[in-house]
Amino acid sequence: MAACSCRRLGCIPMADRSGYSGGRLQSLFSVATVDPPTRKMLRATADDTGAFITKRAREMTPVGRTGRTRASLQQIDTHRVPDGFRSGVQSHYWIARLVEHGVSGHQIRPKGTKGRRAISTPEGPRAGARSPGFAGRHMVSRAVGEAEAAWPELAAPHLATWVIEVENTARSHDGVA
Image 1: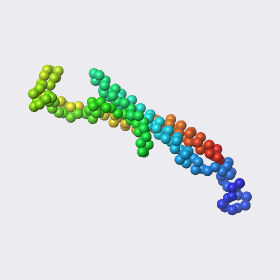
Image 2 (image 1 turned 180 degrees about the vertical axis):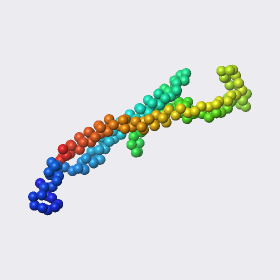
Image 3 (image 1 turned 120 degrees about the vertical axis):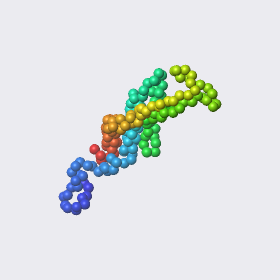
Image 4 (image 1 turned 180 degrees about the horizontal axis):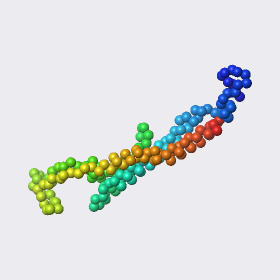
């Protein structure tokens, strides 16, 4: 039986009354106990969140004649960064950026030197045209906002698994039941 700091005869420390058998509580909080399950949980949560953002951004992307802009949205592979893990959505198709942010009105001029060539339009060749521009669809920005709102549901299964893994790892240390 452990000695009690109150020095009264017959005093049994509270830890002995609760069935605690001498293990150290720091086993529950040590880096060796929580680090591997925490990394696993953070990676899985980042991956699921990236998949959610990619799916929602694709759903909100308008489909033109080819569907290339929507198809160009790909999930970023989940990877480690200094402060955790990163995932998300990306596109290397130049039109995707224009659809996301929009385009202000502008003059379209023919290619070539000093405007000597005409541009093709549905109405026929022209020396130039005025584009009215268009508002951005903000599909990625909106998908990120939805992911932020849905994060408790996205993270819940991974957090439940994390709790079980940390407790099981702590139980493997002497004195933790």
